[in-house]
Length: 162
Image (spheres, rainbow, N blue to C red):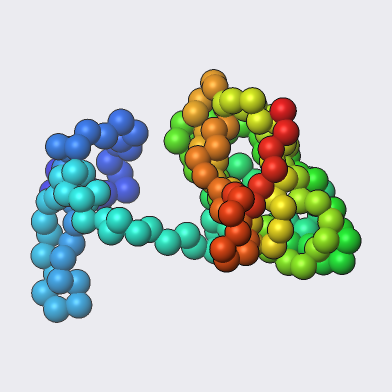
């Protein structure tokens, strides 16, 4: 084992929390090889995880929203209408955040291909309105929450249709 490169090892795709991983600490001063459990790696991740640029898309025309990006920003100007579709994904628990940005007076609709309730279409009513959905598997997309774009507004900022 000592003479084997890490890249030559067999890949593992089914890990348990008590499995071990190899880490190198103090790289800049005195590099030291150590072990760590998978559970300890995940316990050290902060509760707030930011999204990098690869997780965000901006949509300004009709079409399908990405099922590999966590955040979709619907952004249009003038009277442009943005009609989008959110397709099914394979990973249960995938969370999708949709934000209406821009100054468009047109409608910004999201059609759900598979729904977890009675909602077929979600219309984001004004700039700043947001909706959060989660993929539940065979039951489809479930609405977790929404928020209006205007401070002090009493409705949720969206309109749903069945």
